[in-house]
Image (cartoon, rainbow, N blue to C red):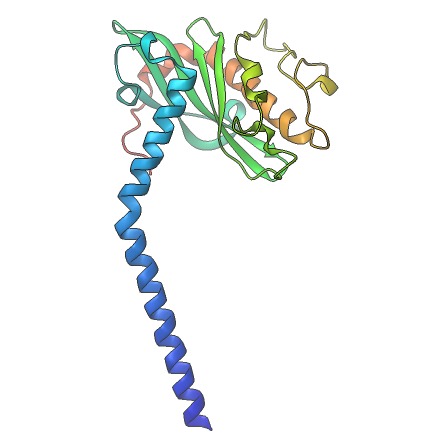
Length: 210
C-alpha cells in the first residue's frame, strides 16, 4: 500500500514537472510573437488618436517615461509618445490609469494636441463587468468617442465628469463607478499636460517595455 502511494506520488510529481516545463517552453517560444502583436495593436491605437499625417517621426522613436501618481493614477512609469513635426512637438499620446474602476485598474491612452485639446481616448485594458462596465471599449460602445474636442477651461473644470456629478458624460445604466473613474483619469491627464508638458521631451527614453 505504501509503495503504491509512493509510486503514484512520483508519477504525479513527474507529470507536474513535465507540465511546468511545457508551459515554460511554450512561453519562451511565443514571447516575442506576443510582444510583436501587442506593439502592432498599440501602434494601431496610437494612429486612432494621433493621425499619422500630423507628425513626421515614428511615435516609438519619441517615447518618454513619466511618473505621477497624483495625475496618472499609478507609481509605475507611464509612456508618453510625443508627436513631432520638423523637430517640434505638436501633440502626444499618454498612457494613464484609472485606479478606482469597479474591478480595479483601468488602463487607457489619451491623445492631446500641443494646445491641450483632446484628440481621442482609447481603453488599453480593464477588468470591468461585462455588459455593465465594458462600455468603455470602442467595440462595445462609441462612448469613448465623446471625449474628442474637449479642452479644460481650468483645473477645476468638471465638464469631463459624468452627469450625476455635474458633468457632460453619460453614466452607464447600473455602472456609474466605471465612467466616473474613467472621466476622472482623463481629466487628471489633461491637468498633468497643462502643468508639465514642457518637461516631457527631457524625460527618460522608454527603451523596451515588456
